[in-house]
Every structure is written in C-alpha cells, then in structure tokens.
Length: 412
Image (spheres, rainbow, N blue to C red):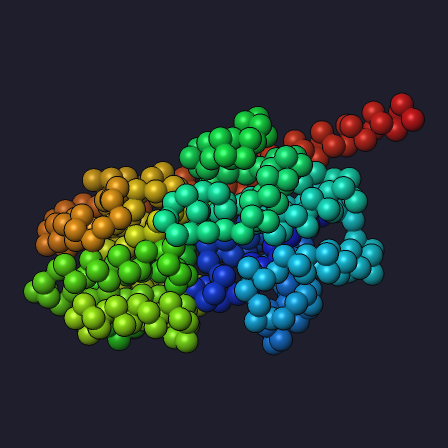
C-alpha cells in the first residue's frame, strides 16, 4: 500500500474547522486523525472539502503525506443543509484540481451523505473503489426524536450511496443493523470499525491544575461538549440541573456553539425560566487541543442526545478518566459501560438523569471507581489500531479492483 493515493471527500466537514461551531464535531476529528494516521503509513491522503475560512490556503498540510484541499463552493456561511445543489460544482472543482496537478487515486473515502453522492460520481468516472462512512443517517435521525424531519433528498441519496458503494464502514453493530434494516445494505458489504481517540492527548490530568488553568472555582462541575442543536438534548440537561438542589456548588459548563446561535438564545432563556442561569455557563467553541483541560476539570460528562451514531465525546471523556452519564442510544451503548464507567439512561426526561447524577456526584468513592475503570475501557479505540483496520479494508478493495481490471483487460 506504500505510495498509494487516497481521495477523501468531506464536502462540509473540514478537519481544520474549529470544533463545536456549527456543523463541526466528531466527524471532523475522525477525518483529521484518520488522515494523519494513514499518512504516517506512507499513504498519500488528500481531503477535499469546501472553502469555509478565507484565512486558510487552498492547500493546507494535515500531517506527513496528508493535506486538506479547499474548493470554492457556495457561500462560506451556508449550512450543510444548503449544500446539495452545489455538489456538481464541488465535483467539477475536484476533477479540475486533480487534472491540473496530474493526480490519480486508487480509492475514494467519503464522509456523510453529501460526500457520498460526490464519491459515487467519482467512482463511476475514475473506476476505483468507494468506501462510505455516513456518521449519521437521516432515517435514523428522524425516528429518534419527535418532530425531527430530514429532507427526502437526503434519505434518497443515502439509499443510492448504500447501493453503489463498494464498502460501508459502520462505527457499531447497531449502525450496521440500521443500514441493513432501513437501507437494505448487503451485510457482507458493511464493515464494523469504530472511530478512535488520541490516547496521548486525552489522558488523566491533575483536576485542581486543570481547573486553575481554566479559572474554574466551582466545587462540582458537569461538562457538555458538542454542537448546540436540539438533537443534542441540552434542554433536557438544563431541566436536569433544575431538579437538583444547589447544595454542593454544582455547575454546568457547555462547550460548543456560537453565542449568536438561536438555539443558545433559546437555552439561555430556558435556564432563566427554570432559575438555574447562574449555574450554567455557555463557554463557546474551544480548540481541540484545549479540550483535555475541560474534561479533566469536570466531575461528570453529560451526553443527553436523542441519538449518537458513535459518541466521540464519550470516548474522549473516558480516556481522561471522567465518568459519563448518557442517553442509552446508538453508539453510546458500545462505549459507556453502565454501572462501571458511567450510566446509560433509557428515558429522555430529567428525573432519571438527575437521580443518577445525584448518586454519582454525592459519592466520591463511586466516582473514583468509575474514573479508574474509564481509561482502561477505551484503550482498544486508540487511533493506530483503528487505522490498521481501515487500511486492511482499503487493501482488500484495491487488490480486488486491480484483479478485476486485469481480468477485463485480458478478455478485451
């Protein structure tokens, strides 16, 4: 596999984007870390994404043998929901860049349904294998939360990509089941390979020192990390805070989002109405390198999502030795060990979250036991291990494609 070139298509998810801002989350981390790991194995990785920041160059280094290529598509302020009409333009710019730089690729990896559509076109034109990762599925998302409605074009496109891709990588067995049941994916085409975590960056640190560096003085701290959108269940988390009496200085820090977002304004108003505004801090988006300080400053990480296809935040928190209280949904069920490294809550209402939180916050011994078990539970998710599994899948697809090409040539 040495020297092979992989085209990674991530239309809206730039691996250099600041996490926690709109449309930037765990998928961006996955693309960045996987690209760097594959580059260290002497593959050449080109990540094609749209130009979202005028301060970035068209080509930015991601790591050894890995780079990000920004394509001028649509308006930089457009959300991912507005990008579908721009996909043909994205494809044209990508093809033009490859032609201008005399680039050829042996495999395409796509992330999310928008990228899957572009990769399907590329697969047809370049006649090379396409590996798809969806990260979230429209049909699953709208079934998980009442009132959630995904555009029909998304689900239609996902079905086409599932049918045409040479391989689909699912983060969990649960996701594979959803792909086969809701999208009629052939089981033998779906490989279960989880996302990973950087265990060197996310590791236990001294809690007092972490709090001092962040200027935090609260005695008990809850942490939420992620995009600020209704699907993440932050209203449930604020309602949970209202269920708990302020006896121990319990404070919630929300990392992610932009202060001007309508959803943050709605959540601030909710906190005021419930009388907990003084105990909730909206910290905004932070650099990924600084996240370990926030995790280590926290006593508990909260993930009240209505669905998570994987759960990168849970992985990072546990790697830092921080217990997690999360919804019993999606990939979180494969990461959080209920009663051992945290708690999984099967109901989306504040009372059971508050009950488990009071138990964990009020019992230092229990919390320390969870913390000790947390780090060991995620060591199998180390990025080099995950990259090896991905690379094996790439190798088999490329070898299969080359064999078929030779057979075709011999019979022509």
